[in-house]
Length: 178
Image 1 (cartoon, one colour):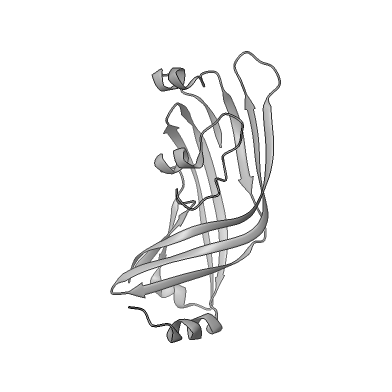
Image 2: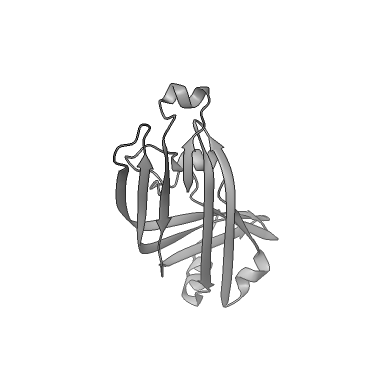
């Protein structure tokens, strides 16, 4: 994400005019678990990734001087699954899922700001594709955003390989659902 204060009244009220910077968040080779339940033509679920990820922030304040920098290690990420019997949407970094992957002690937009600006893409998947033994999914986008006193650009990319687990399918058959 690259951003700067938008120069408007909200920027002036928040005292962030003249701030600009970048925040990056990424990880490689995560393992995890995803579950999707379809009942009465409605789909819900979740996915959790376990990894060693890194958030890095570099923010320059007004008037020069040394930039604010921070690096934070992350251990988990998640997505939600919403949809119907025909297709599901994977929703990345839902606002209440925490932790906040873009937040740092440096001045800048928060994950909640990015969520409210709808800058992250959803990944839509046909339900019939979830029946495959292995499914490769990809989402990539670059969106301009305006959130509160900030404006900028968010680049997002994710590649996910889902593998069906026979053991989990057997477990879900044993759990009665209301």
